[in-house]
Image 1 (cartoon, rainbow, N blue to C red):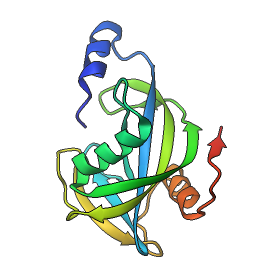
Image 2 (image 1 turned 120 degrees about the vertical axis):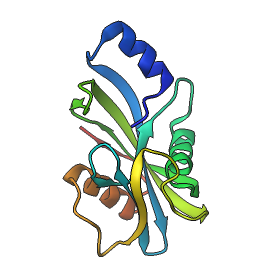
Image 3 (image 1 turned 90 degrees about the horizontal axis):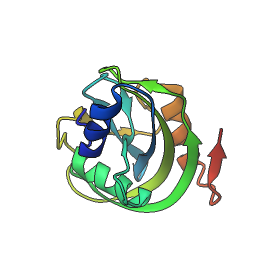
Length: 155
């Protein structure tokens, strides 16, 4: 996974020590389908995820990440969930904890495809036939599908 330049610079100074970072998950719907990516680093199927750049609004980051990774343009409709995630140790040994902002997004246009090297595959999956994935991603998708207008704050 490409690491944002600001994190590369921080890592030069702190090595693999844990970082607290704002993250986004974009759950993109198109009718009765959801957009999923197969990550290059782990091979897992997930919604689009990413890191918020310094000074960037999380909703803008969600839209940007979807376009960068899949070539799809979306509208960010609402903030569905905010969750402090447990510490993650990435494949390269870097540790991070994320304050994840889960956004409900609606497809606008574009052909879904791997648009960068962050994912091996991109596909629209029927809501009733999702590939196997970790519970944390299913929980984020489920929160969006409930269409509750009140943001869920999960600890």
